[in-house]
Length: 199
Image 1 (spheres, one colour):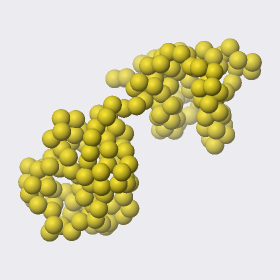
Image 2 (cartoon, helix red, strand yellow):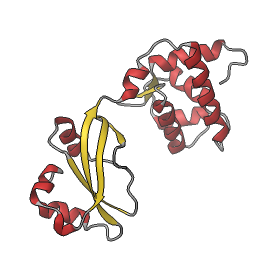
Image 3 (cartoon, one colour):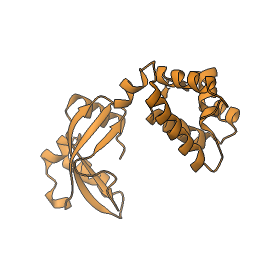
Image 4 (tube, helix red, strand yellow):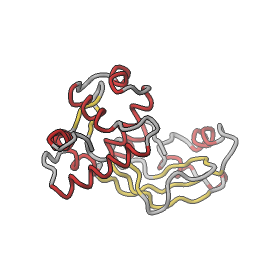
């Protein structure tokens, strides 16, 4: 579930507390959470709703100027069911505190190595995690289109892999390109010092 910039700002300030989507199948669930660029958003409820049950007040809570504008947007997609998503509290992105950790304890290190091994084992392109960590460490702030060649991947596949590392608190997105987080640098240092120099 994605939000446009103006809606994200409304979520951040508390002005947007509701969302509507037309889906074949919901991509969020009641009681779950959603990581957004402004933080981790709690999803209170996800329920089907008929168009004629959406009020002008609902539209305003969803960040629209009028009910008509919301309905017009929902009707652009002909297939799927309309859902009413009640938005709850917004908490800081948990990955931010995680990636600021500049030390990796032994048990945590072993858990991260296990996660990296699993990522490598599932990848059709073979082991990529260490190559990617090394590339980001050596070339912070370099565009994905340039970095992908260093690790032998297509751009979109490279960006997907970087997001997987970001979910572990190992990388950060910059205005241009990426860099390793303090946690990522600490992990890479341990990996380099390990026998075999591999996850």
